[in-house]
Image (cartoon, rainbow, N blue to C red; front, top):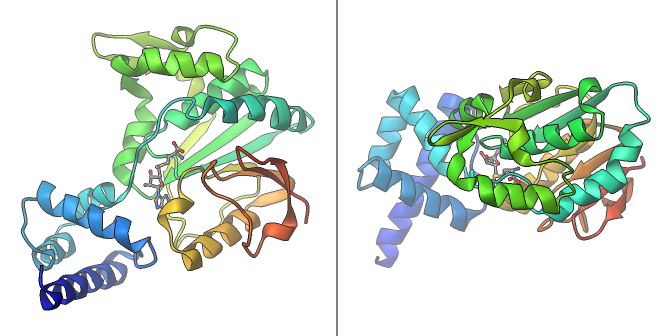
Length: 276
Ligand SMILES: C[S@@+](CC[C@H](N)C(=O)[O-])C[C@H]1O[C@@H](n2cnc3c(N)ncnc32)[C@H](O)[C@@H]1O
């Protein structure tokens, strides 16, 4: 593409993102640039459109096309017991703290299609804490949230998930928690009983409760520094004192404005405890 073609492409992207803020209140302008450009290219091809101006027209006039756009922009890659060592550390370092509370509120921010949420529900069940826990699982992507509510995952991935479950310290067989049909694993309904799934946008919605644990793993990596700080402040405001924050192994609170309000419980899995 020529220099002027590139500039025009960039102008169209900025126009698209600004119009989306005005029309829907969703603000993607501070997402990491390279990633958002790549995702928009992906949406163009799945919508069979050849330029961003046409995409703008479509998403502004059709809320369902906008939902598809959000789904296309969101990187919803996830898996059950993702990074099993995180769950091992959670069992060892966080569960004993949670056991001291009469009631536990946990927030999964950016839960995608829910695999991580069912994983933590299984873990809390095995640790005898699930009955007194309420899990709030949120994502900005309505399509992912609908999938998460179902608790249905491809049977073809269960072998991989079972191995991760064992590595995460699981004491049973994962198959105990689902029934299978020809293609899918349907997670048992008792695991859903204490979970509230809802759409929530970390960029523009505010804090909605005080939590003992906030898990926001593999989400901040898609934001630029300014947005990352803003979202970290929101997560901080959503935690009780001595509450636990986990942001995923690729992230860190180092050099952030809230760094000094936390002690590190685990440096590899980036599990922190709020101390002020
Ligand atoms: C890579 S997935 C991470 C899923 C899960 N936490 C995990 O670690 O497996 C990133 C998720 O962040 C969500 N996300 C991105 N921007 C968001 C925002 N502004 N508010 C809420 N969720 C957001 C995406 O929709 C996507 O589902």
